[in-house]
Amino acid sequence: MTAKKRAIPDICRLMAAFLVVANHVSPLENINITADFILTRVLARMCVPFFLMVTGYFLQTDGALPDKRRFDAVMKKMAVTFGAAALLYLPLNFYNGYFFKNPPLVILKDIVFEGSFYHLWYLPALLLLLPPVYMAWRKFGAGPVLGVSLAVYLIGLGGDSYYGLAAQVPFFKSFYNVILAVAGSARFCRVPIFLSLGAMLRTASAPKTAVCALGLAASVAVLIAEALLLRALGVMRHDSMYLALPVVMYFLFSLLLQSGGKSDKRLRSASMLIYVLHPWCIVLVR
Image (cartoon, rainbow, N blue to C red; front, side, top):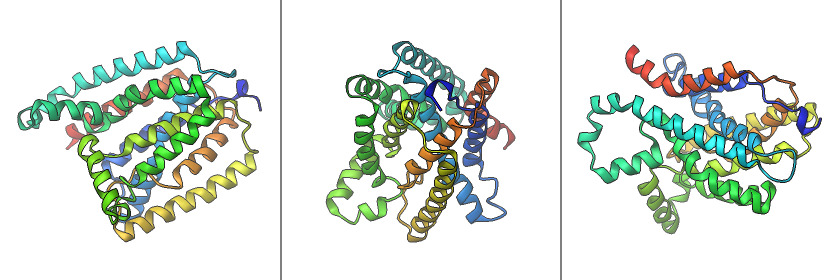
């Protein structure tokens, strides 16, 4: 199947948006804690990588270089969305006394690394990291950049789900504590790899459907086992990054590219609205 014929089904964006909501409300918590953990702390962790891969795939053309006009359009859209969302959540920040409890430098740091509300971190992360990744794509190509991005991801694991293991070495503990003190988390480290993976799959030959399905099933099983083991060991500082996650996303995205899905602007708009507005709905319901 050629790259021109590939399309990401927009219904998947909507499903991913609902998984983001599930991550913030823990729908199975009162039924089974382990099931809720697998849903919200493992499977739902595919959502951000999926959105990042869609962005990378969209920017990469069928030729050698990513598209400058698409890059400008994505940056503009993300900036406008982040600005509007930040204003939308100002009342909640005032209501919970955030601006009265924190000095200006802390507020600025939170806006840069966390967004103006807990779910908005994705937008400033993309605004900060997409430009250097994009420039590296144009100079070196998505493949080589993917290798560097993988190294960044592996480093980030030590400040996330593998923190308890990394912190046993004094040097690594000091290193990650500095990162965590500045950025609050290491989840920024997962942005370059999934952007680059999406761009690479635009022009790369995807495995056959049966191979993708088998690879996805096996890698998801490994992902769940990895998460449960780390949870049992009590070493997780956060749960947004796993060793098996890039493998899962490679097979999942490759499988979606072969599904023959169609683009639907209404579904894309709905998924963005759900992502931006759902914390307001949670607050109003509670």
